[in-house]
Length: 386
Ligand SMILES: Nc1ncnc2c1ncn2[C@@H]1O[C@H](COP(=O)(O)OP(=O)(O)OP(=O)(O)O)[C@@H](O)[C@H]1O
Ligand SMILES: [Mg+2]
Image (tube, rainbow, N blue to C red; front, side, top):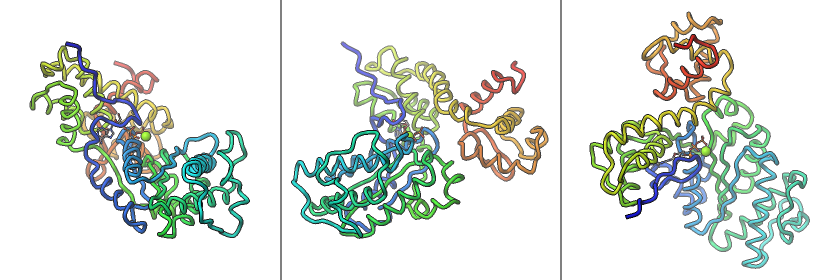
């Protein structure tokens, strides 16, 4: 018999075979389709690397499509600029809509002629055209939103990686979105995703008003029982078997971290001699060791690369303690003004490398973070390698 294909998806941005948990985010978002005044009309998903922000946005888009809504989806790390990208995609949507349903009947005039922007009759502009003026985007969204509303549906705009966007672009997008979505008879919703570092950089600044008004879902690790569902169901659906004790071993090792769940799932499948006969405990143990190493390389390596020397020294000072570290001890070992300790502590908390454990103490978020820091610190000469 041929071996069934590995059912797991250990890749960023690729939807898992089973999207475990996330019920409140999904059910809140569902309210958007029946109520244009739903607070979830503008939603922000918040979470560390690999927690499943992109795949949750994908799930929102799937829900939107199931309700007949159109989606314009963008990611903030666009060289051409965020607004230009959204404008281009919205124009394409409008052109496709017109090709299918004819030109929208109703025209919305917001201080200038919609006909004048040319988006009603032309197909999408070519790459390399100058950035869209604010009015172009605003009027395109209005025309598209009204045309969709006439057919009883709406428009969802998603922006992934919002933390990578220049403040100005977020501010401009926020003001356009607020203008075009303020009328309930024109349902236009927004869902964005960002790393927590957005908070430090933007929430306090001028882009804040729009982002602060968004309905926020902070997503983190799944519960161990959700991790069990995410691991068991794909195995069973692919024709494999795993018994409860072995499943629990795999779920516990993942700690409920969504990306690690997919890595452990994929590796245990590959390690297993015959998944149809059943996955064995030793196979899971071998898989976990491989998965944790990959997790460190894929999740913590990019974080480490972006740290300053002082951030790194802070982390290196933590390695002396087997468990958690007292901030005061780190201060003593850090060789830098202890007045700035709390600022660096905060930076490392939002980078997702450390977590606060009780008053005045921090710890590495997980074993993968500690071992990645230890390895890099030795490789770069921050500590004597053993
Ligand atoms: N709810 C879930 N259940 C099971 N697996 C999940 C879940 N959410 C995400 N995953 C898996 O976790 C991995 C990371 O997901 P995703 O790329 O969405 O994370 P992210 O938060 O967008 O990461 P980044 O911050 O790096 O962009 C993927 O392999 C995905 O399939
Ligand atoms: Mg992502």
